[in-house]
Image (tube, rainbow, N blue to C red; front, side, top):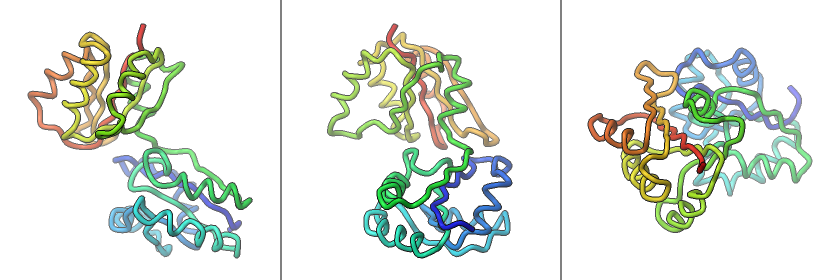
Length: 224
């Protein structure tokens, strides 16, 4: 294979969303960088991919970037995958991609699964213009960010963990207003996929009565 960095999306739940091209690339590269080799190991085993793996996550990517760039420059083909979805979308990948660009190393990103796209499209909210916010700051800067976003007119997309969802929705009610329309999608592409739409108040009421599990995408209406 051509020596370059391949950014390869992996399924966010349903393994049938893996593309033929992604499987081919992962079988033919010299090295796969994986966010969690245990999680990715199950995926690779399922598709009978025996390529060598190396851990590449938020805690070690700063130290690894230069070494990986050098390996590609020496003629190796390297693929980067995250635990689920497209690398660098709220996952490791940006630092390595930037280093490759700066070093003149070729990058090829395959199209594929990304959680926020189906969540946005099935939300029923305007998707001609939107802003992806990912995870809100946990503490420092959170209030400032919410105050700025209260004036955002485009549809907003957030990622959130199950145990923080109600707190975040409460903040949306406080800063955006309890009547602002939201759509919460969880377990996308999986057996128990669910999307709840309504006002912030209605969605808070719904999830206050239900146990939350899985990855969550929150889509919020922009200010009218």
